[in-house]
Length: 154
Image (cartoon, rainbow, N blue to C red; front, top):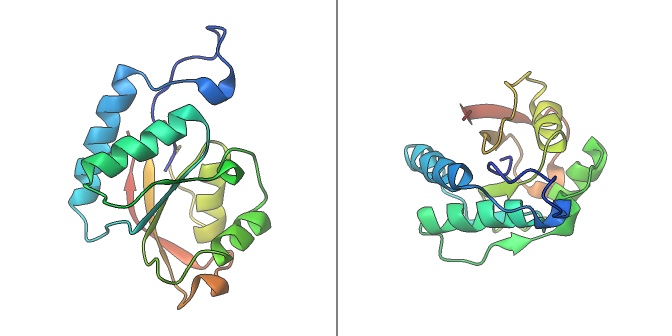
């Protein structure tokens, strides 16, 4: 998932401290309702340490009645290669069947493409792609090992 709509960076705010707008908060509620209409429910939510991604993950967790803590990881802020992302996924615990990742463009949409080899629509803010990794363990994650189950654009 890409973080939701945020303030422009031209207000003297650093990129890491850009907050969600009112539209961004409302959009997350709409995306949470779409997710509730599927059979997918995250047992792990990971988000970048940028404020807008952290807020997106936290509000989504609240709307989904997610009872665990959201994990904030600076790795998800910077641009990374497909192989670095695969290595990141391989470190996930197999106790997690469904992982929701809140990141940034262009990286998050590129990772969706690399995992599925499917040209998805543009990842506007708060766009969510539900991918099914066709592996038995996160340690077996690889490029082209996923299929797009749902794509929720905004």
